[in-house]
Amino acid sequence: MKEPWFKDSVVYQVYPRSFRDSDGDGIGDLRGITAKLDYLKALGVDVVWLSPVYQSPNDDNGYDISDYRAIMGEFGTMADFDALLDALHARGLKLVMDLVVNHSSDEHPWFVEACKSKDSPYRDYYIWRAPREGAEPNNWASAFGGPAWTLHEPTGEYYLHLFSKKQPDLNWENPQLRQEVYALMRFWLDKGVDGFRMDVINMISKAPGLPDAPVTAPQRRWQVPGPLVFHGPRLGEFLCEMKHEVLSRYDLITVGEAPCATPEHGIQLTHEEDGFLNMLFQFEHVDLDTDPALGLGKWGLKGLDLLDLKATMSRWQRELHGRGWNSLYLSNHDQPRPVSRFGDDGRWRVESAKMLGTFLHLLQGTPYIYQGEELGMTNVRFDSIAEYRDIETLNLWREAVHERGMDPAQVMAAIHAKSRDNARTPMQWDDGPNAGFSSGTPWIGVNPNYREINAQRALADPGSVFHHYRRLIELRRTLPVVVHGRYELLLPEHPEIYAYTRTLGAERLLVICNFGSGTPRCELPEDFSFDRPELLIANYPVDEGSDIRSFTLRPYEARAYRL
Ligand code: NOJ
Image (cartoon, rainbow, N blue to C red; front, side):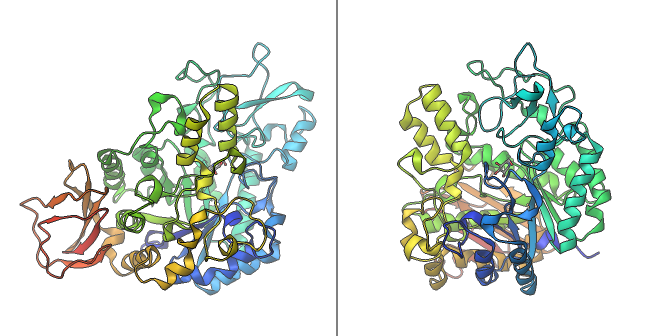
């Protein structure tokens, strides 16, 4: 049987606002992306995922859509979009669009109509509730701070918004709304797009009755709704309908963003026969450096314990093997830069960026590269809150510093570590003005390290992170064991070394990664047998024929062998 193409593809995520500005207004655009496709081709990826390019008032940078069938003016026109799609296809690249249908913008005509009267046919496209004792209908917090409900005064009811108040949640219980979503999906697929990344898709079915959330942060008025808004009882039914109405009729790639998903959810949603989606973005591994006991959500910082990472990744690898499929990612537009977060963005920047890439790309699943990750781009440390743009970051500052009186230095430290703007500073193309991103004033500051870290330099340097990623992609393309091999963890208790094997028939890969700046000794188990190991990739020079049963690893060293 021919395996589906999503399994051996590598996806590159473009955040259009920050990728490349072609017209000097300081905002990345579609023509800018088209101009850089040869760069992506040189890297070797197969698929490009665009964060939303639809019309939007940009309360949440395009994740608040006011017209699902129009292109955002700042990004260009539909003709620019068509030209981009053609240019991608001409190079054998596929295009994945972001599908944001848990919520729309409050400026979407559906919501505007819904607000006109309680009898509007669009009223039920959203989730409305009468006040409870004169206040919010329940105690849910919005993901961006404050309550998840806003009162619409003219009609006297509250509407639900799990994100900002300009992102009202759509009511998937309404069959008409669901048909609207399927129709807009067909609109893009009929244009020729090759798939969807589905924003928080496991939130479209909520707990019946929208009950209060348990009080986990007593000092707070609003509580994180957690499981009450994920994997609700009708999720499978809605996705089954979507599969029947749309997905099964096209040859496409689908990835569902699924916060709070467990491997069991993963199997259920991606099972080859009875599943609905090709793969998920699960969050367990990117939540490991957060301490829930601090009650600060993602801002409560804790160092990563490698044993936790091994346990989490291994569980997903083992449980989905042969049953479902998964994505592999360390970064995206919501996450800090991996080299700053899990590596060392100073002395060992290049080595640790390569190590993290090696670790991730040789696992089972479809790898995602977020723009700039292939250059080892780092977090940014803006001095002042005035330089930040992200709604989540700005809301945190207002709440923590101005409303709760927290120490601004402590809040800024959390922002430096975790703000989404770390990923959103402009792509660093060269060492010219604004890193070659724009001839105008960029909408967000360029990371000052662009003279050292940029694409032009990386392309010219055979030892760059870029060329290491290119080689990793090539390995996936040439060795079926990288795509299909069974995963096994080695040295499970080692606190610094992450080592694993992948096996497919007689083919076996061995991957050894040092996750720290120390020089630990790698001692393979005695019963671990191999013949003549062939070095496939490494981030340091390795002597041919050197002993691999027992050797000392250099800081952030990574090696992969074919055994
Ligand atoms: C997840 C997206 O990745 C994020 O950027 C956005 O803010 C929320 N969903 C809401 O759409």
